[in-house]
Length: 83
Image 1 (cartoon, rainbow, N blue to C red):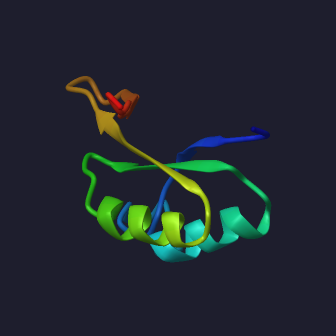
Image 2 (cartoon, helix red, strand yellow):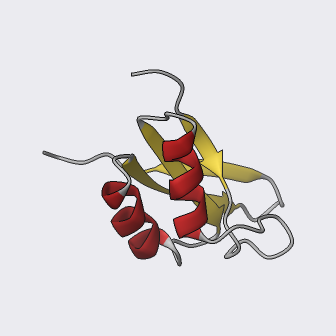
């Protein structure tokens, strides 16, 4: 597998992302990505839409979130499948 973006924000990340999850999945497919992680701020609001679109475009969806910690810093969390 080639390049995989592990930190992408959609329109669900207010003022930080502009594209809908489906648009990100389509663009990842156009660029030949085998996988893409959606890491919106403090939630997984667009993850279902993203997963469905990514699978339809042949891109492996990776669910994640960029969580804001108490002191204001961020940590990016990615979900790993047990399968």
